[in-house]
Length: 136
Image 1 (tube, rainbow, N blue to C red):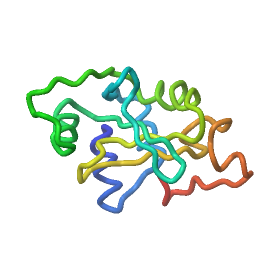
Image 2 (cartoon, one colour):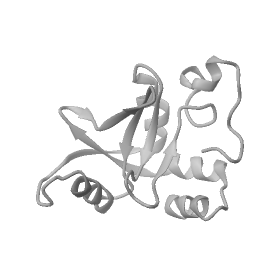
Image 3 (cartoon, one colour):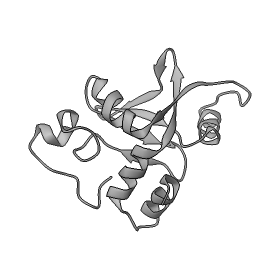
Image 4 (cartoon, one colour):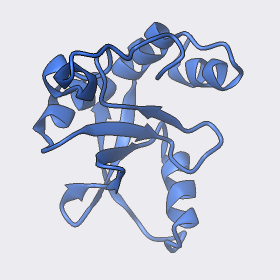
């Protein structure tokens, strides 16, 4: 099932975390760029990179933030695997991914074992495993 289907199944109460993470890793997503950096937000000590499944999702997000609908946004297309395995470990402090933020089908990929490399997973620092089937 493609990423959109796995996200929809998660929201419908039929989560398959391994399939969801696998599809995210295989998907090519859009990372908006602002001020020469990937667009992100900090919340409760975690940096969340904004990633979008398509240009329409970026446009809805931008419009929701008050951006002129005709304004052009810079962005990069990146595989989910590259985000999780390369970008996230390169960020100082805990970081995760907010996919399609601001939409009903938004999804968070938190910085925990099984999603990001153990060396940057917040649960790995404490020796606690939090990657159960109810979390992703």
